[in-house]
Image 1 (tube, rainbow, N blue to C red):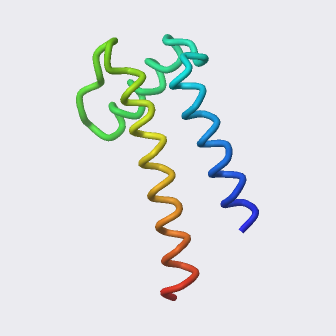
Image 2 (image 1 turned 180 degrees about the vertical axis):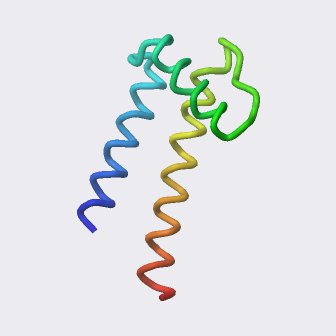
Length: 75
């Protein structure tokens, strides 16, 4: 449970940093290009980088929390 709380806290802080433009654009673009290349989808344009980062972070939070819920209450 503690790991899940820490994960959510770290991801929320990353999301806030992305919204506040505290993460360098080059680093963000490089990470997104790797993620999108791995998944096999088109990388976002320079104007869409911040929004894409926020979408990836929120998606990761929802997926991890959903899986934790399923593991705790379904199985």
